[in-house]
Length: 206
Image (cartoon, rainbow, N blue to C red; front, side):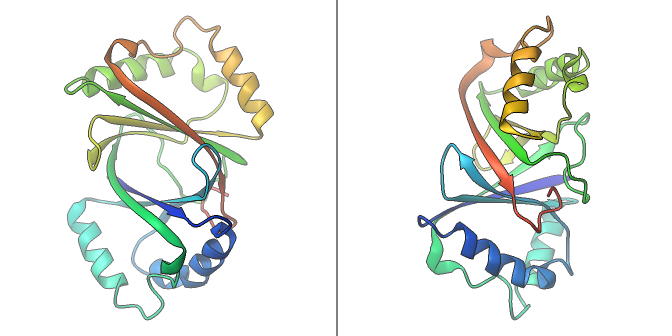
């Protein structure tokens, strides 16, 4: 299993129209594979939309994209709104939940992206597995955690759903009281970034 995260930065005030056009064309794309999630940013880098597609492997991704490109309404007519596009491929951790599947987990999602030193991801993954089992998942669910395979390397992405920003703040404060949280990976860390996202009405995570 792999996930492709496609991040588009749009012109200011274009998000609503982008999502409207994307939804109008989506049925043609869903003939070939499932959409795992679709969000737009609310806090952090603004005017971004993030859509995530799951595939069995890179070969299936190439086949699906070639088939979908033959559809008359795909990709959606949104090109004039886009300032930049980025695509990255991730492999979910063995202990990660499956992203998508029509299950609503929250109204706000936090995507945290950590870059680690080369060669450290296997150790990072093991320490995360231990830390998650140490009480953090009893406070709120994890949507997915995964490491990068294509694009920016040595990335670790974890996405957390919350009912509200207030719930996020409360749970983060409580989680820091755990002896096991956060995972002890700071020695390998190069950079950290986060964004708070709202699911589109048509997102499987909405």
